[in-house]
Length: 396
Image (tube, rainbow, N blue to C red; front, side):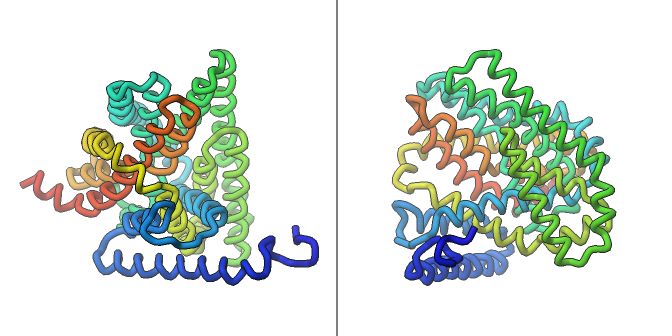
């Protein structure tokens, strides 16, 4: 809605140049970082995170940023990253993959959750906080993983379907885990918790069934559309379904993934091509803003525990990815790639940690989660880049 007086921007006229200038400077800085990453043949994610840390609260640069705008752009970036993953596979391929990913999914869950839970108890935290830390360490970042796979040109690799199946298993598990731990933190009854979880799972099933039932027909109607019509339809539907999914306490990322999954050829290929520039733009905003929210002054006190968690869960997650890829008949280089790409934690881990803000150990949980996620988000992509040399050494 246009504000009174006909002004398109809610901010005052004097604020508009500052806002435009700030956004432009951020985008130019991200462009420079991307160019550096390209020159080094690396993904730009670690550079985005370090930049966000530098300009955030307590950082080394006092840089004005419209946090609400960048936060919204970042949330859109996560949806577009998951849309891209969904566009890589058909519903039939996903169903086949999920049938074989139950056991690897459980192994993956234990590989992440158990170390975090044990460390939480070792720190003397209450059980609720330890459970939340287990969740922080369990869930890999779908946003970072999908970005890394795209940056390194591995979306078509054989092991990528294994990684995707594990990510979807994790996200579907979050549909039950998040409502359950949220109810646990506020002291909800067992009955109310079970009802909340059941509603979330039902919503996931409905969205998935709808994508199977009407996805082909929707794609058929979009097939003759112009590129402009197609990008508007896909982008709008992604935001709409993501918003509806979030409204019923389901991951908005799952909704975006299912939108991509519902697309059929030749619309799928066109949608992937048209959304790629939007994905890169908004995803950069997500990684920048994620680190922007972290106060560097909170990190030293939890650095030791974060490093321990990085080493232990990095090894256990890599082993889980190796195991899952081996079950799918993937060769050793693909197993190493699958294991290392799962190390990065991100958006879901922060959401889980935020649920414990009201707990007695909430501040410590938040700081440790931030340090741990930042470490894994930097180390994970770097190790993924070196996966093939690591595999060659293992086979020597």
